[in-house]
Image (cartoon, rainbow, N blue to C red; front, side, top):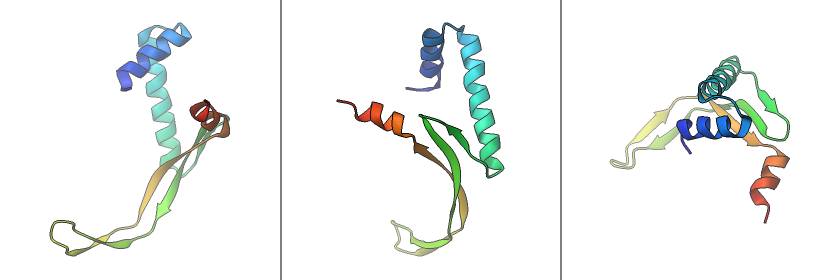
Length: 92
């Protein structure tokens, strides 16, 4: 599902116009992004948690040449699904 399909599905499910659903999706992405940039976290009970994690610097290899390269440390976004979401996905 891409962003346009997500907006269409949200509009249909919620009864909102596609324009309003689009604004809602954009607002969610913006708010979550800003919070993660501040090293915060966004927890949606039953759905999951968006947070950041520090990834240490490390040495890797270029797969084409075999040459060692230095990979710098980075802060990366992570999503940890909640129990309710896991249960829905694994329901048989």
